[in-house]
Length: 381
Image (cartoon, rainbow, N blue to C red):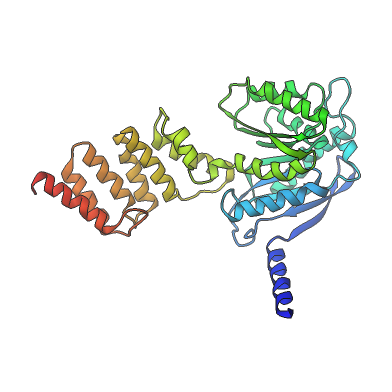
């Protein structure tokens, strides 16, 4: 029994050592007061001195920070999203004033305007200077504060590219403003959630906003909506946060079967370009230059084969050689390209070159040798 208790305490210590939170008091000139912050840095933040990280600002940090920070840590541990810096702003005593808007224009006023400027002109610049933040910035709010985060969306050059609106208590014209803005925006990720047992007024407003969004035809924004069954105004938060992160970071994860079937196969433009653009975009957003996954090479090459776009195998092979020079992968794609475009000698040479390198995925030395022998047999060499 003592051993079990000791082991449990040790496990708790190890976990807590990975997920320590910095508690900081930030003095604001705009607010003329100090604000309490909770800051969770990625697990390996100190080790990776050159790495930058997306920034996630969480309003209602008193109760919303922990579920967001926990999900971010979990998702990034399994590489389903990039490691990120999470910052919660405690608002237990100031929440009502922080989200204040006037009754004529329904825009931030008085303390609400000061809080808006505090985030945009003080807090975010401070975090950018103090920590290694990437371009991508996300803001999270719940009911009253979920309405407030939309005001950042209306700026000409929004400082936030991602918005997680959990059961927002929308100001009267907010639904029309959001719809209009998203219809003409680009590179915005917007998540909206309600539930069957949400507050009636909020649920009605959110569903109406979602209906308006269905008429928006803008491929340059990424809109996601959930209406959870049997969840309340409060329990939907626990379901909405992981769904939002999963949706927003879909591009970061390996190409899924769903993406393969719904995006790659019917793609009318270059499948090779899709792969390159995907990694270029994630590098720009997350500030992380990643090696292209073998899984993604295989997904793209399979789509190329299915659609018989053999000319795309040549640049794919050259890219694979650059990414994985010690493996068979790139030489295999080049050999396939030559074989399908009527150059069997070059194909055979590429298979032979690949044979000498390390096996990867489904590619083995026996497989490559069989390919060489098949060409020799077909042409009598």
